[in-house]
Length: 206
Image (cartoon, rainbow, N blue to C red; front, side, top):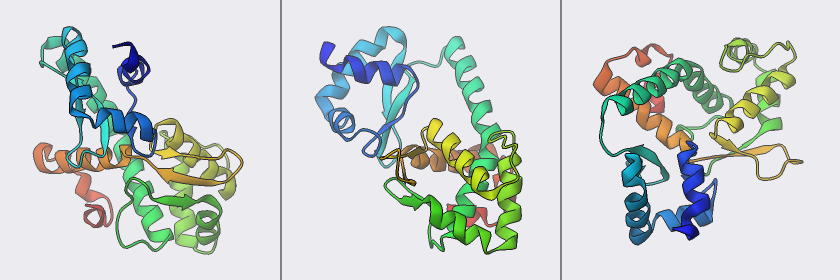
């Protein structure tokens, strides 16, 4: 299992691995034998390798839902729900600002300066961005649009939703964790009957 050590460490740390975030690791995890090897190693830890419906992102789930696993999942789910509304608003804001016909998905590129310029020219978008930046998930203290946008994108990068291929170039690539997020939204909408549909134009994202 030594050859899988670095990947296992990242998975156990809660990371999501997709073709965008790590193409080599994603290719390894797409191999059926590798999946079996990793699951065999993880079994005593009550963990297993799982992917979303489209197999575009890998992460760890629990093998059996015992008491400890349920408590951990409940905690993770609560955190996801708390961040859900600002993330949904960001998705909608990007879609409207950049004139996209569909929601973001893994591999999409967002140019920071283009997003800033288009938001500056639209008072409604500026107001929505200001409200979004002040949400506790992003927690911006700045009133400058440029600083607010940079903070939002930095936070999304820290949470694994965006990747910045070059630190000196202001563009970001969407990772497979966005696909996972959309799946979570659909689950909440369909199974838990939580009010995610109250977000303006939310259905357009799904």
